[in-house]
Image 1: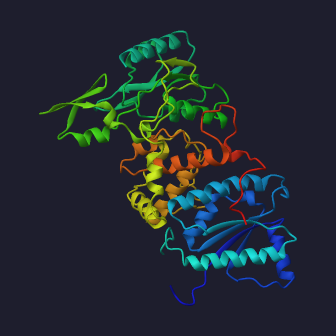
Image 2: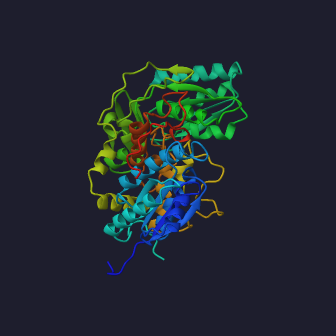
Image 3: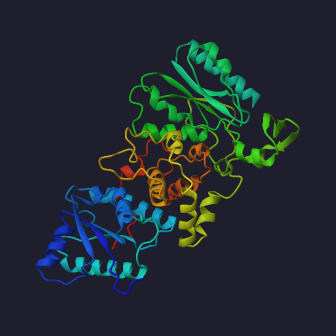
Amino acid sequence: MEKDWQPKILAFLCNWCSYAGADLAGTSRVQYSPNIRVIRVPCSGRINPLFILKALQSGVDGVLVSGCHPGDCHYLSGNYAGRRKSATLKRFLEFLGIEQGRVQFSWVSAAEGGKFSQVVDEVTRDIKRLGPLKKFKKSS
Amino acid sequence: MAMIQKKLREKTKELLAKKEVDLVIGFSDWTLPLRTTPIFIRTPEGAEHLVWNSFCENNLAAYLHKFSRLKVGVVVKGCDARSVVALNLEKRFPNHPPLLIGVVCQRLVDRKKVKKAVKGEILQAVEQGDLLLVKGENFEVSLKRDDFLYPSCQSCTHRTPHQAHILIGDPVEEVSLVETHPEVGEFERKSPEERWDFFEKETSRCLRCYACREACPMCYCGECFVDSSRPKWIEKSLSPSDLAFYHIVRAYHQTGRCSGCGACERACPMDIRLTYLTQKLNQEVKDLYGFETGIQPEAAPPLSTFDPEDQQGFIK
C-alpha cells in the first residue's frame, strides 16, 4: 500500500435529512475527514443496489448510504423500504467475500451535524484499515 | 412413474377437449437421451406426446410470459409451482392465472453426473423403478438413480406442488436427503478471500450467453440491466469484474423471489455454480423476514414491503 494513500468514499445522502445534516456540519464548522464525495439522492429508498456495485466497480474504496431516521422519512416509508434492500445487499456482499465495512449505512437527521462528522470519521477509519479495494474493481 | 405419465396425458386430453384451457405446456421426449424438451399442446390428440420422467428439468413457468392472452395449463413440479405463485404475487397474470397441473416430483437426475459415470457416448437411457439403465455402443450399465440427483433436488423439501389445481401422484413426506443448502455451508466455511476467489474463478468462465437468465421464470424484465444502454450499468466485456457484476446482480434480483429450482445452473453451458448464490439469499430472507418464496400465496414479496420493526443493527 502506498504510504500516502487516501481512500475514496462515495456517500449517498438523502436530500431531506443527511444532506441537511452534512450542511449543518459545514455551517457549524465541524471538522471531518475529507475523503467522502457526496451524491445527493431524494431518499435512501432511492438507492438501487446497482448504484453501490457500480461505484465499487468504478474505483471507490467504500460506500456510505445515509438517510432519515425510521419514522422521519419525508416520503413516510422510503427509508423502511431502503432498509430491507440494504440489509440483504450488505449480507450478500459479505457472503461473496467483499470485506465487512466496505459498504456502510447510517441514519443522520438534519439536526445531527455532529453525528454526521462522527459517522464520516468512523467510515473513513474503517476503510483506511481495510486498504484499497482490490476485489471487484475494474482495472482500466 | 409410468402411472403418472398416463394420468398426465389423460388429464391434459380432458382439459383440452373440454376447452378449459387453450394450451398445455409440458415435457416431451427429444432426440437426445437423458433430456426432455418443452412441448406446447393445443389439441387433445397432442397429449400423447407428453412424458414424465427424471429428466424433466426445465422450469416451465418461464414460458408463461409468452402466452399471457391464452388460458394456459402448465405442468409443474413443486419448485415450478412456487415460481408461479411468486409470479402471481408480482401480478404477472392479470387476464388468466395459469392452471397448474402439478406432478409430485421424484427428484431429478443430473445428466452431467451420469455422463461422467460412464465411458463413451450414451445412446439410450431408460428408468426402471430406482434404477437407471444406460446404454452406449459397447456398454450397458444400470445405475442407482438416487446417486445421480441434482444438488438442488437432493436438498428439496417442496416436492409436492400443493398450490396446484390438479395434483397427479400422491403427496410425499417432505425430507431433505442431505443437510439443507450444503453448498452455502461449504462456501461459508471459507475465508472472505477464498470466497471471493472461488466466486471470481467460477464467474470468469461465463460467456455471457444469458442462458441462466432465459431459463429463469423470474427474469422477465422488458429490458434487463445488462442490456440497458441508458444508463449503461455494465460494459459488454468479458473482464472478470464485469462478469462478477452480472452474476452478483442477477442473483441479487432474485432476493425473495427464487424458488430454488436450479434451472439457471442446469442451463449453463459452462457449468458455473450458481444456485448457492440464490440459496444464500433465500436463507437471508427467511432469517430476516420469515419469508419463503411461493409458500404463502398472500404474503407480499419481502423487498416490496416492510415492517417498522425490521432488524437494523447494521445501521450506524
